[in-house]
Image (tube, rainbow, N blue to C red; front, top):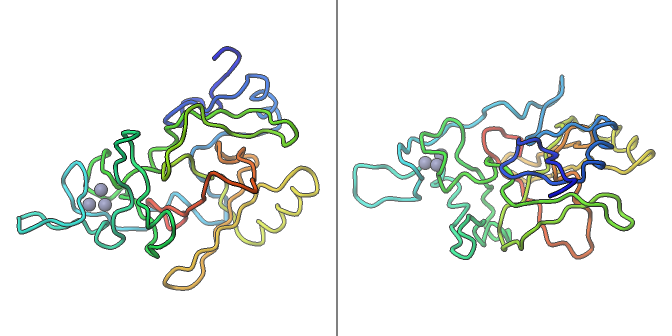
Length: 233
Ligand SMILES: [Zn+2]
Ligand SMILES: [Zn+2]
Ligand SMILES: [Zn+2]
């Protein structure tokens, strides 16, 4: 599109369209695009590989197999199937019970140590944005995000990527941001087996397209923790 540029500069699976002039303003303000979350010194490190992989030496993992020489996938046996193929969009969607929260099992994708292929059905969020997204100036709410084609229920849109920080750092940044602009720091609390884990992400200066999504009283998106290599969602 004329006058538009890719804010992600090719780092996502699809260009993140934004008007050239808006991209320049963001760049001048110090904003840097990162498709995945990044760590800060003495903070949690999202690049650490924390989980074992499965031993499926096949293109795509399968949940269980009958009497054969192959063994069932350890990733899918533990956390069950996360995605199914939707014929309507020829793409993956999150299975209904994980979308609605009826399944209490967390969403773990196949990771860097898994022996399956890149096309494994249990790999989706790790491939980044696939939908054509556009950042645009809203009437009175600053920048917002829209899709250029309809979304299907359960379809992955984008991560909320940014700097992963500690709780005290998150409190001080949130207070600072509220005073000058708006607060981008998000806190995700999860009840896991070992208790409550909290993750704090600040995409204000290092972030992805998720940073531009606005709040809504009638939202059409849902935020869910998804893990790949790291214990940080
Ligand atoms: Zn797999
Ligand atoms: Zn597997
Ligand atoms: Zn796996």
